[in-house]
Image (cartoon, rainbow, N blue to C red):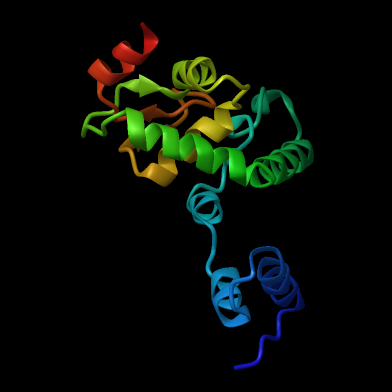
Length: 158
Protein backbone atom coordinates (compact mmCIF):
# COMPACT_ATOMS: atom_id res chain seq x y z
CA UNK A 1 0.00 0.00 0.00
CA UNK A 2 1.34 3.38 -0.98
CA UNK A 3 1.84 6.06 1.69
CA UNK A 4 -0.28 9.08 0.76
CA UNK A 5 0.40 11.27 3.77
CA UNK A 6 3.54 13.23 2.85
CA UNK A 7 4.37 14.08 6.46
CA UNK A 8 4.30 10.42 7.52
CA UNK A 9 6.30 9.45 4.46
CA UNK A 10 8.94 12.05 5.31
CA UNK A 11 8.97 10.87 8.93
CA UNK A 12 9.42 7.26 7.80
CA UNK A 13 12.25 8.21 5.44
CA UNK A 14 13.98 10.23 8.19
CA UNK A 15 13.70 7.29 10.61
CA UNK A 16 15.02 4.94 7.91
CA UNK A 17 17.96 7.27 7.14
CA UNK A 18 18.81 7.90 10.81
CA UNK A 19 18.59 4.33 12.08
CA UNK A 20 19.09 2.13 9.05
CA UNK A 21 15.94 0.10 9.78
CA UNK A 22 14.17 -1.14 6.65
CA UNK A 23 11.86 1.47 5.14
CA UNK A 24 8.81 -0.81 5.62
CA UNK A 25 9.51 -1.03 9.36
CA UNK A 26 10.05 2.74 9.57
CA UNK A 27 6.78 3.35 7.71
CA UNK A 28 4.83 1.17 10.16
CA UNK A 29 6.42 2.98 13.11
CA UNK A 30 5.48 6.35 11.59
CA UNK A 31 1.85 5.24 11.23
CA UNK A 32 1.40 4.38 14.91
CA UNK A 33 0.47 7.28 17.18
CA UNK A 34 2.92 8.02 19.96
CA UNK A 35 1.94 7.34 23.59
CA UNK A 36 2.00 11.08 24.27
CA UNK A 37 -0.30 11.79 21.32
CA UNK A 38 -2.75 9.15 22.59
CA UNK A 39 -2.76 10.63 26.11
CA UNK A 40 -3.21 14.17 24.76
CA UNK A 41 -6.14 12.98 22.65
CA UNK A 42 -7.75 11.31 25.68
CA UNK A 43 -7.20 14.41 27.86
CA UNK A 44 -7.95 17.46 25.67
CA UNK A 45 -7.15 19.96 28.45
CA UNK A 46 -3.68 18.46 29.11
CA UNK A 47 -0.86 20.85 28.28
CA UNK A 48 2.57 21.96 29.50
CA UNK A 49 1.00 23.83 32.44
CA UNK A 50 -1.06 20.85 33.58
CA UNK A 51 -4.81 20.58 33.10
CA UNK A 52 -6.46 23.69 31.67
CA UNK A 53 -5.14 27.23 31.51
CA UNK A 54 -3.69 29.39 34.29
CA UNK A 55 -6.24 31.84 35.73
CA UNK A 56 -8.81 30.73 33.12
CA UNK A 57 -11.79 32.39 34.81
CA UNK A 58 -10.23 35.83 34.25
CA UNK A 59 -9.55 35.38 30.54
CA UNK A 60 -11.90 35.67 27.56
CA UNK A 61 -12.67 32.47 25.68
CA UNK A 62 -10.45 33.20 22.66
CA UNK A 63 -7.46 33.90 24.92
CA UNK A 64 -8.02 30.66 26.85
CA UNK A 65 -8.27 28.69 23.60
CA UNK A 66 -5.12 30.30 22.13
CA UNK A 67 -3.16 29.73 25.33
CA UNK A 68 -4.32 26.12 25.59
CA UNK A 69 -3.33 25.43 21.97
CA UNK A 70 0.12 26.99 22.49
CA UNK A 71 0.76 25.06 25.72
CA UNK A 72 -0.38 21.80 24.06
CA UNK A 73 2.14 22.40 21.25
CA UNK A 74 4.86 22.98 23.86
CA UNK A 75 4.03 19.70 25.60
CA UNK A 76 3.90 17.77 22.31
CA UNK A 77 7.37 19.09 21.45
CA UNK A 78 8.73 17.56 24.69
CA UNK A 79 7.87 13.96 23.83
CA UNK A 80 11.38 12.62 24.43
CA UNK A 81 11.46 14.23 27.91
CA UNK A 82 7.97 12.94 28.76
CA UNK A 83 8.93 9.39 27.81
CA UNK A 84 12.11 9.67 29.92
CA UNK A 85 9.99 10.66 32.93
CA UNK A 86 7.52 7.83 32.18
CA UNK A 87 10.37 5.30 32.20
CA UNK A 88 11.64 6.71 35.52
CA UNK A 89 8.16 6.54 37.08
CA UNK A 90 7.61 2.98 35.90
CA UNK A 91 10.93 1.92 37.43
CA UNK A 92 10.50 3.73 40.76
CA UNK A 93 6.86 4.12 41.86
CA UNK A 94 4.35 1.30 42.18
CA UNK A 95 0.77 2.01 41.09
CA UNK A 96 -2.04 1.61 43.63
CA UNK A 97 -5.81 1.87 43.18
CA UNK A 98 -6.50 4.93 45.33
CA UNK A 99 -5.26 8.31 44.05
CA UNK A 100 -3.38 10.22 46.74
CA UNK A 101 -0.19 11.74 45.25
CA UNK A 102 -0.49 15.18 43.65
CA UNK A 103 1.20 15.99 40.36
CA UNK A 104 2.82 19.22 41.58
CA UNK A 105 4.68 17.52 44.44
CA UNK A 106 5.49 14.64 42.09
CA UNK A 107 6.98 17.09 39.58
CA UNK A 108 9.40 18.43 42.22
CA UNK A 109 10.37 14.90 43.31
CA UNK A 110 11.12 13.93 39.70
CA UNK A 111 13.20 17.10 39.20
CA UNK A 112 15.36 16.29 42.23
CA UNK A 113 15.81 12.67 41.15
CA UNK A 114 16.57 13.11 37.43
CA UNK A 115 18.43 16.41 37.76
CA UNK A 116 16.52 18.63 35.32
CA UNK A 117 13.47 20.87 35.19
CA UNK A 118 10.17 19.08 34.57
CA UNK A 119 6.90 20.88 33.84
CA UNK A 120 3.71 19.90 35.62
CA UNK A 121 2.31 18.82 32.24
CA UNK A 122 5.31 16.56 31.57
CA UNK A 123 4.85 14.84 34.94
CA UNK A 124 1.11 14.41 34.37
CA UNK A 125 1.52 13.12 30.81
CA UNK A 126 4.22 10.66 31.89
CA UNK A 127 2.08 9.28 34.73
CA UNK A 128 -0.91 8.95 32.38
CA UNK A 129 1.26 7.11 29.83
CA UNK A 130 2.38 4.67 32.54
CA UNK A 131 -1.27 4.15 33.45
CA UNK A 132 -1.52 5.27 37.07
CA UNK A 133 -5.10 5.58 38.34
CA UNK A 134 -5.98 9.27 38.52
CA UNK A 135 -8.60 11.91 39.17
CA UNK A 136 -8.88 15.59 38.42
CA UNK A 137 -11.55 18.20 38.15
CA UNK A 138 -12.49 21.72 39.17
CA UNK A 139 -11.20 21.21 42.74
CA UNK A 140 -7.68 20.17 41.72
CA UNK A 141 -6.84 23.14 39.47
CA UNK A 142 -4.10 22.31 36.98
CA UNK A 143 -3.00 19.30 39.04
CA UNK A 144 -3.91 15.61 38.93
CA UNK A 145 -4.03 13.19 41.84
CA UNK A 146 -2.42 9.80 41.05
CA UNK A 147 -2.69 6.35 42.58
CA UNK A 148 0.96 5.88 43.54
CA UNK A 149 2.52 4.02 46.43
CA UNK A 150 2.96 6.50 49.28
CA UNK A 151 5.77 4.27 50.61
CA UNK A 152 7.71 4.56 47.31
CA UNK A 153 7.00 8.28 47.11
CA UNK A 154 8.24 8.90 50.68
CA UNK A 155 11.33 6.73 50.14
CA UNK A 156 12.27 8.79 47.09
CA UNK A 157 11.65 12.08 48.92
CA UNK A 158 14.11 11.17 51.68
